[in-house]
Length: 117
Image 1 (cartoon, one colour):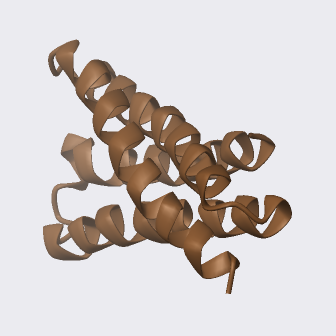
Image 2: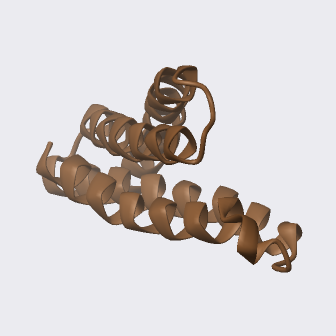
């Protein structure tokens, strides 16, 4: 569980940075493609690493899935809050939380499987 919290905090810092770069009107000159690639690659790598660490520590794939889901909840909620702060709908918090939990759980489970090898 601690791996999930620490992974979520680390990913939240990346989410905040990406939100500032991608949503700030004065930074519209930054190309979108690298930001989109980073917005996909960073969480995937973070959830997998979080699941791997939890799976390695406990020896169970389920620990990787749980840690990934926790990291996904935290980073997804922070991403949703970032959207709200930039004037988007409050629904983004719920969507970020749920999508983060599901994606983090699935990818974290994959990391947990790799840790057992």
